Image (cartoon, rainbow, N blue to C red; front, top):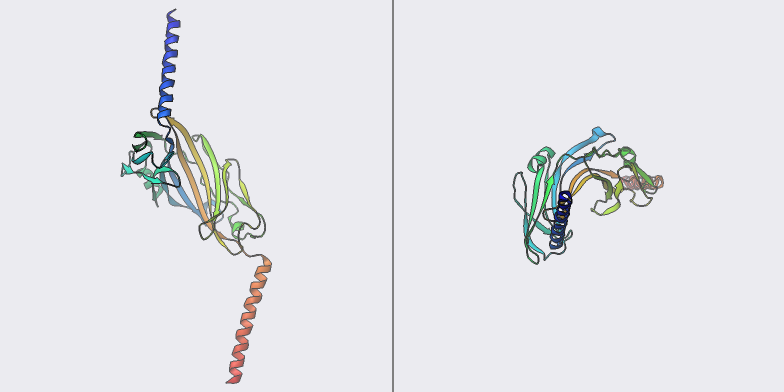
Length: 284
């Protein structure tokens, strides 16, 4: 009998806890989720891993909301330099955000260390609220790089091209891992992208005609490690990001017929210059 009473009491406590969490979730419906990331960046200039060098990294913190009028401002508090930081509203993301970058990744990690990150949002249309993320730190993958980089630099824009990259090793800490690959033109417009690929993918194909012959392009290869969780105290889903980016530039070469036309054009210009010089000399 005592054991039965104890079990009933446990059941009542459990239902009460679920009720409190449901109430907190309902009260916090104006905040969708929040995330924090300390992300390293690299640049590839040659075919092998020795041609990939660190360019530092960037920190990002975002609290996504339902609409701009829900909150009037906010701060981010953490255990590193400069805390607390003021959050700014970014309409494109519908989020209150803070970001920073540093050319030295070790310094970036010191400024934004592992530990608690707390978003405090000041109420406007909604009550003030807080979101907490316990950032573990160090859950990074291997450094991504393109294994056929030299072939990419010599690619024919009028034919399909397969971009090969080093196999993704997410490690044992991340709960989810994805690959993102994109190409932008010299104006900064994305002309090709493959998002959210499985971590066992090792190549993507650029369709023929996607790029312009002779155009200069930049690529971004991203291995994204993530740890998802939940702020049970305040009732919000949260995500830790460990995004490792490798960027580089290349030029899509003209097809052989285009090169032939260019050579003929230069030859024609040279002939005209020589002919004009000969006429001038004869007239003199």
